[in-house]
Image (cartoon, rainbow, N blue to C red; front, side, top):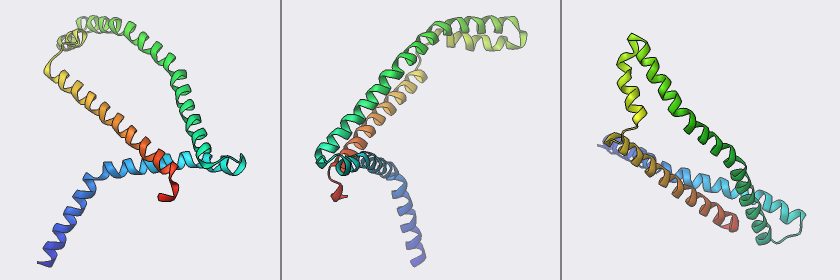
Length: 160
């Protein structure tokens, strides 16, 4: 009876840890973000004679400015590459269609290439789009939670 109870308790504990792993990961990321914010804040407090709140504010502003600068810096090349992809994709699909017609052994692929070229909206594609949207929203919420935890722990380091 004792062995069965220990086995059931172990299975329940492993299941709980597995289900809570996302929460633990978010907490860990929030703590790491707080450490990232506190390191320059502590340096500024020691060397620049700023108060903790002013140094933390300066660190947060510098961090947000750095992220915004990186986003601005990489947005132009990414948008250009997306434009190039939009231009070259129809040409590539036309070449693929010609290739499947040219070779006898590739003719069974012609219908597949034609369907991909048309990009039909079917239920499978709609299901995949729903999954992408759900994952994106979940990712955005996770980032917001990590930022909140990080800012809170950086502002109140003695509580952690």
